[in-house]
Image 1 (cartoon, rainbow, N blue to C red):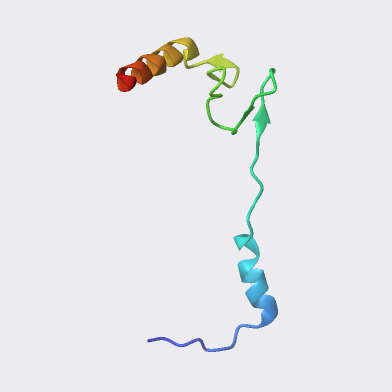
Image 2 (image 1 turned 90 degrees about the vertical axis):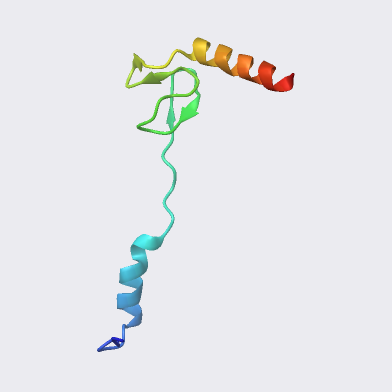
Length: 72
């Protein structure tokens, strides 16, 4: 098993571990004020980069049908 050749100083230890800190979450807001994560489809509007990519009405109808089926 290998052993460290020299002791790691306090400064070098802190320098090494400086990128371990938690970073804040980046949040974007659409025109209506709904928050969503960047580089993802907005779950409320179904838009990505100002283009409609998900039909939200169709998705909600599908979810309602699933919930109705499970409740039986």
